[in-house]
Image 1 (cartoon, rainbow, N blue to C red):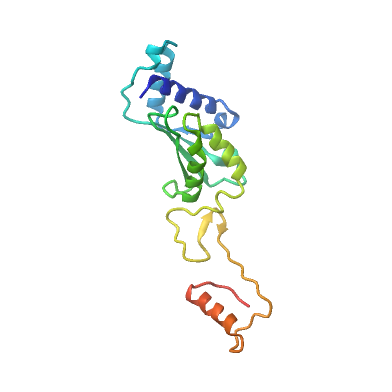
Image 2: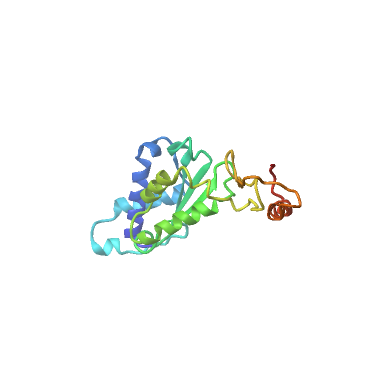
Length: 201
């Protein structure tokens, strides 16, 4: 790991910890020993090129969680964003992001994770955490509704998408009857029964 990357990672995380939400406990460092070590390295490094180009023996990667219930308590109360800084971040990669259930951290909002990762693809070489925060603020009303956790089974209505959210399909037709003289309508009802959709006329 380059010393220059270590310094940039520490500075980025410290900046987040000093924000209002960082002070309110929204950020939990998952690798505190590594964070402390990298801070000491940053303090003892000089601004010389030879010092900042040194390589560090680092086995773990810096990781932390962002509790979105503090940033957006009404919209994202059940979301935790887990962020990991690869060893070559930020000079040659973007941070790794995982969107997970706050109540069940092992369950992932896969669509939300993918959307953030895709958004960050264009920002290799840049510090990304603030961009993730901005993305969440912009998509807080939809990012969980459009996401499905990895343990959920997409087999029709009733799939849990988030806290107190379910998937619902609405089909609207005029004069919808199930009699034999309405073959198209009957065919649609048959398909609905086969796929175990529930509803009524």
